[in-house]
Image (cartoon, rainbow, N blue to C red; front, side, top):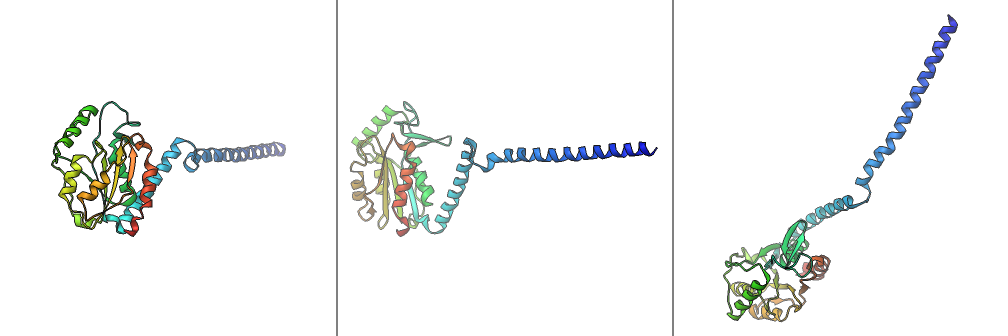
Length: 255
């Protein structure tokens, strides 16, 4: 009887030791599996992590923009005129539009949004009562005829609280080596005396032409910055860093 009891105790001891060994082995195997599953969310590894990083940067930029506005940069207005063509060219090269995060924007609208993000200023789209053609050749003809007629298209949008702005970014495409005619209406309708006007333009090879001089003539009592931003329409989609560097070089905190 004692032998049987001893044998039973021995068997139970062996089973108990085996169970403990299995338990420790399972715990050791689970730990690397959990660490591996967490790794993509904590270490840069692939496009999904890059998207996460971009989102995080976007949140930081938004916070900085809000702080800048609260600090007094809301005295900045970014006014722009932009006509988005819909034919003939893609959104990468030679287009009057650019695709950003699934949204299609006009060239000057896109640049204006970058400036707004960097400065915390207010966006203002210069729009007209009349509609412009959105296909290339008809738009060229329409713009040429407007210039020949020295037209002043009626504006459909109005600036509120103009007195609250000290700095006006002014964006436009170069049409026929000149300001688009709605810009003449805009600059003749508002008095920017004592304010600083900072031009930016997109063009097909002509740069600013003499548009900066024209702005100065139409607003003789404003300070018009001659070192504006000129971007070829072929380069707009990759111009973000250039826009950011230009804005940062303006030293708007000293305005």
